[in-house]
Length: 68
Image 1: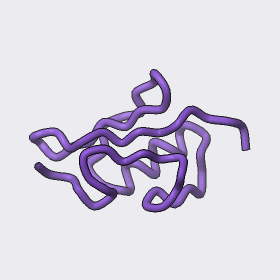
Image 2: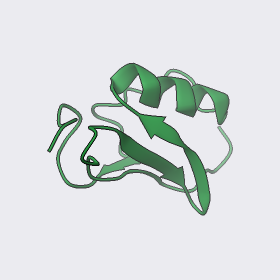
Image 3: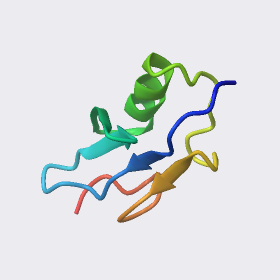
């Protein structure tokens, strides 16, 4: 697998979405784990366990925190 910048899932917004970035690139606004998986797939990171992968940094709550 090619080296990728760390993926950051930012804290939930007031609407519940979480911005997902890789380096300086914004991958999208996720509303659930499936969205995060899809953004990673589009970025060339397939078959990543989004809940446990060391490639992903969860800020403002873990993988099950979607609303403030």
